[in-house]
Length: 237
Image 1 (cartoon, rainbow, N blue to C red):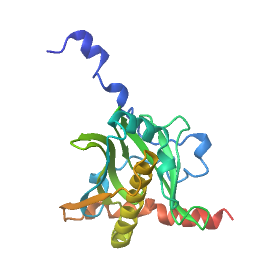
Image 2: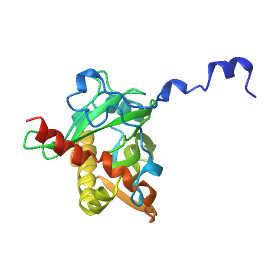
Image 3: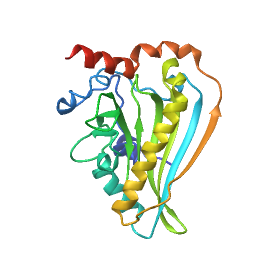
Image 4: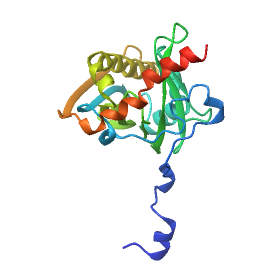
């Protein structure tokens, strides 16, 4: 039974969730990279276009670290574990609920133009944190990063519930799918190595949960971050 005092205080985990917001706003320090995020709405899988996929990547770290210590490190140094083809412009203090972070993905850093987009930190606690994507991102998605206890020790896991956001990104899905897998496998390998587990095997599982495309959302293409990034690069020269 919930008492009046408990109801007034709200759910026990309220501090772990981002506050509701109509539009996303990027911190002034990241405006240079967040031009495709500022003013956009959050877009979950039901606001996407393509088929619905669940993708899971994981690596077992053994007894090298506890789930809590793993997530504390991952939240504090999230972008440091990314492969060179991406750059995360998050808060210096680490991942926290409600943060809006800009990011760049594409070619290896410093070798050419990249697609600019971002994420909202929807939830974060001692053993997990979750992102939601903005309109225009390659995916309309929810992505959860977690540290879990398994029989051999600790498992680092990334689970994604995703649709491509528009018809153009759906056409590129075969290439995007491979690139996304390489990116997150590289991230988990770097995370494992930082905790003394070199040469760890990163596992993957991909399942199509809904083969239907949501044609009612085809107009999402107007927010396509690939098109907008290219236009930004051309017009800012």
